[in-house]
Length: 110
Image (tube, rainbow, N blue to C red; front, side, top):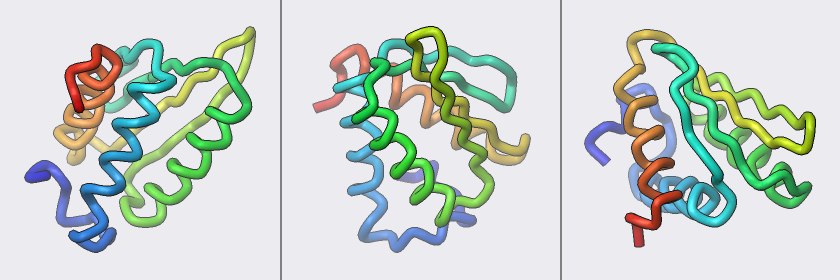
């Protein structure tokens, strides 16, 4: 939790719950995570409408408390992609999110 930036307006008590939501969707539906640029990560998910709805809801809520995130959800060619971009000042937050995604997909988080 030490990587959550001061810019985050989500109440501290709710932050572990939000992280758990990200961990769950990464573990349950994530397929891969890759760095697409220094300030961007692309996460591929199981291409299902329920997963897309879940990701859209989570991205909307996360954007409301951490406005520096730019989430783009794309569905094409039987793929579901979530692109996450941040300003250069928030690359450590993006690094932590990418690491959480990779760990959850590998089954390393409980």
